[in-house]
Image (cartoon, rainbow, N blue to C red; front, side, top):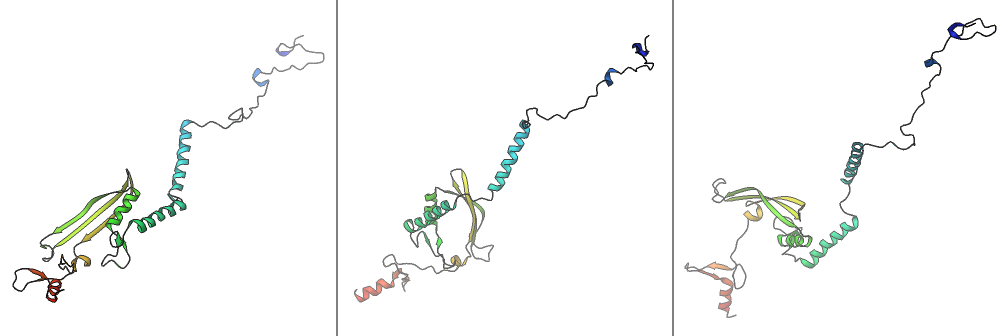
Length: 214
């Protein structure tokens, strides 16, 4: 005797056995899978690696902006070089000294600045940024007026080490109010006077010496 669905009926089995479809015969449970079966870090693409290097470079650059450009020992060594140059290479009144109308503190003069530039291998390039020249004083109540503004850039090779801006005009007290006296080429004193008859000039110091026979 055959049972339902073509299966043979056993002894005392009067209930047909339902057939199980092949798709329901085994329950498939999905298993979690790792990104890498060897448990290694996932590889980054070339784009991701480049972006990571750039971010790290930006962080390093940002920190570098706030760091000194030289060590303390190098800074002290550089200062000592300037001090020795001032003591051994420069002369007071020639390379540095007091500027009339600019206070009592000695200032670096042009010859001294040239020596420091030679010592550190600097080349200065100047650009005239502003200029006003009134030779007749037409625009300044009949008084001649001159004004200059210059920008100086210090280069070591092709690298710009620093720059500065300076200006000067003819009405500054050290230029406008000064006593220009003629110095005698013989004695070096401001003793040149004009003769009474207007025939020429003479040195009163030398004339007195001649009268005294000394």
